[in-house]
Length: 252
Image (tube, rainbow, N blue to C red; front, side, top):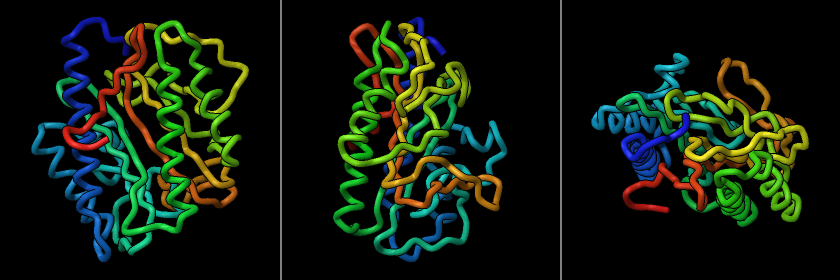
């Protein structure tokens, strides 16, 4: 989607705020002994209260309102009977629509404290996302996002999952541009047009290169196996940079 007026931007900000508030409320509710199904039910109730539709459910028939991926699961984890424990890393990915507008956000949270090395990975995952967002501006190359994130990852000794990309969004969960690399690439010559709505969502890892399918047809795992985090915002490209629409009412 390309935003062309303030009404469209307001519509995106509304659904962006809803998904962000939902994700952060779910994170605050996490506690040892809770199942991921119980956590998902909190998200489902919050989306319903706001009149929003879960995008993975409505678009793809995903068996949950939100994606909840724990530890070795890096994306698209199905909410179920898995019990959260102290020290878990939990990625919560919330995408939804309202009044014909879509927004998508995600972040990796913790149940209690993590070992220092994993907490550093989590902190750097968020930094990598913001480094990518800083490259979003009208007229700049799309590939600049992946180059900037890649330079940061290399300096810090990380790898990037190279088959889970950012994407256009706005009027559908996934739309043009359908794959925006968050790793260095030389083949993409596309430019960012003013008003382009897109996600920025690097998967930063301590050794993973690819996302591999699990047995359930949805959940993805890093290959080689390694700790991996993901952070994601939906943004709109403007002349002076990116407008982040997935900001919660209270949080970063």
